[in-house]
Image 1 (cartoon, one colour):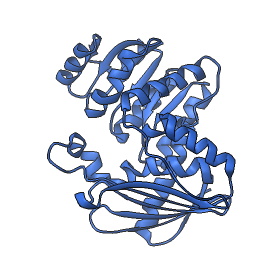
Image 2 (cartoon, one colour):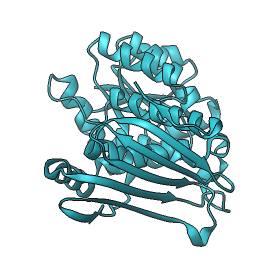
Image 3 (cartoon, one colour):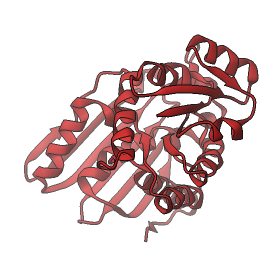
Image 4 (cartoon, helix red, strand yellow):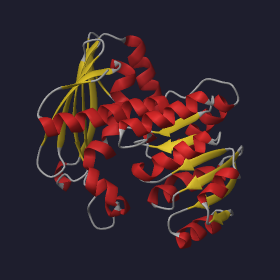
Length: 298
């Protein structure tokens, strides 16, 4: 399958470009970026072509992989889907629920394959744990602490304007939701409170009655940074295992799932429909925090 890569930032270098270049069933057709010089550099490093025109790259491929901020990603993803291209997207799909819904609708209308790269969801350790937890059932609560400290010297992600603007809610919030939704089910109500810096606390009610508590930040004090997730219920208390950090390998598995779906097989669990649901929860959380009220989801 012919793939075009959109984006030239750290994530394109760490995950997307290496995964596309290494995958045996991918023809890495080209790279487009907002900075032509960076696009040329990345394309040369992986033996492909830099495109000056995004529309031309979409026209020349069967699928697009996007490593761009969500407000830039969403319109490109919509255009690519409307052109009949399969989608490999980053999280969050968009920062506006209606934009994410538009992409999901375009994918559904054209029977396209899609996958959203919730990184650790594509690791064997986490995939096996969530499958077992969902089958076990009887969970009454979950807690996810996902706090990073990215605005430190030498951290490439700290230079990201959208992460500084949107904070942990939109950056690591999708990862937290990607853990609890498959096990506890759809979110029906959201309450939230903002703390110091970008610290965000969410309380979610799920369709089966279970609740989850999320603590999120990308600007925590370095000594307070942590990542832990726990489920509790009739089966006891289970801690989610830490997965090995290898983003290019994880993206290779996401591409495997996209190719399977494009060939008529099962759709990835983390498809664009799932990604749109995550965006809807985050948008509701933002509203709950600003209004000081609980927000219900349809």
